Length: 542
Ligand SMILES: [Zn+2]
Ligand SMILES: [Zn+2]
Picture (cartoon, rainbow, N blue to C red):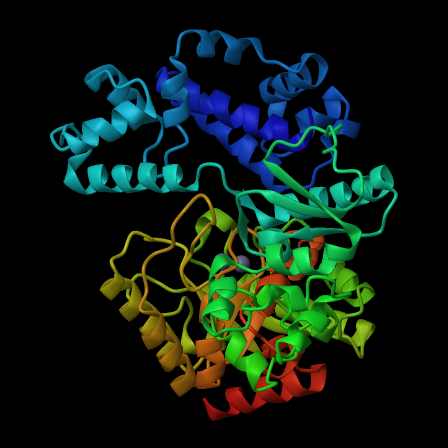
């Protein structure tokens, strides 16, 4: 078992211990250890039992559990608990908003033994009178179950991309051709996918036996080599893209491009500019193509720096120096360090004295690494009333501030919008971080009035983050055009908690392209000097 699998198993063990009402102290230390393992990059595979015991937060008894998992791939204690817990109750542990204690209560007091039964119990209002629940919790549980049902059978782009590219290579060899391409939603770089679609040109029409195990649906189409471009065109665009072309009369004579040698030629034959696959969603792309105004979409190499990253000062895995050196090594001109602010106690948020300590270290590193530059930032919690998390004196000490919501996420649209608006109006806010707090396929964000938020960012010269973590990709790319219209720069930020997290910028760029973002409209495409001047000017105004 690798580190992530071990962390998952320990977490499940802790949850089941809680369901079965075991010693809360033991439950807590096991849950903490699982969390640490999942979030850290400790290489436990290379560690002896003695070394493991010494890792902070692990200790003797948990080290033994890890060892048992490494040696035998199972945990006796877990096996025993699973044998006395209905599997549907185990599934209920996945539902957001109810912890193991409440799951136990639902099981023991309402005799609910599966997620389906729980949804039914919600419809029957049976959670309302249950101690510690109430109608609000019932509503949340119902929503969480419905959300997970809608999302069942969907996959994150980031989890499919590499496998998809591997499959393409495998098919190229198998059919001895270069005419193999990803197509459909994966080629459009949709953030969430239902299947992997691949197009192969071959005179051999026999579908391959997939040697590799794919834990998700794969759809392979085989076409005649001379029809490859036409088929690629037909299978790439969304239904809306194709029906808009049809309605506008562009597809009346398909024979005109059936033998075309490229997709460029196909669009040209319709009198349109080439539309990149990412844009073929049936929005405004056809109008752009008609006017020859397809935006020149952003590329990873256009990004000059990486803003919004964490270090060991708060909950990151790598030190400030390691984060800086790796950013420099990747060819970036600057790094923005934004550890968590003081209210984020769960993430080791920075008390004012630690902020000063970090800023001193940044000054030192900047001398050493010049012309590379570390900008002094913070990810300030947006408190419940919309205010930022430090005194004005402290806020002044930063080059820039990413303001984000991390607590009290259960808000209605009005509350969420006014909370964000207050933060945007704060003259120290530079970037609005992950605007909705969503986690793709696992948590819907709090609802916000996007237009109001973007309008306010425009009025107060605040940039909006496109959080590049593949689970977030927040702000949703569908709002990027509105940001551009209003002149609000979009900042593609990896929110890296580990230096490898920088590589998530790729996923941010994928969806930024879907939204039509260009170099000119992207905040961190600014050079070191440009962004430094921008920060200084903004600070001087305050
Ligand atoms: Zn955050
Ligand atoms: Zn962050």
